[in-house]
Length: 81
Image (cartoon, rainbow, N blue to C red):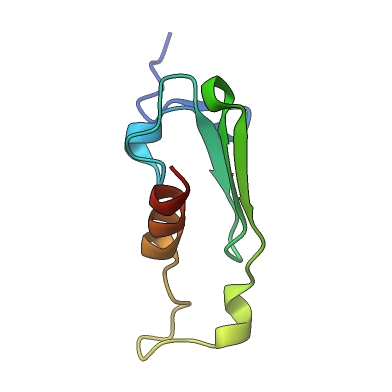
């Protein structure tokens, strides 16, 4: 059997260390979408964080790419913890 090194399960990021949820307790999981939406679920704390963002509304950067939202996601998650 092939080991999934990214620890994804049915579309969910199951390994907080490899996502915007760094430092989350074991059992936490999340998902991110192309336009910027994301969800974090922390069952041990009975908490969920949902961001409804559409980065396509901001236009493209100088490289012709959409802006990355990874730092924003991580900071919001950090503040709510």
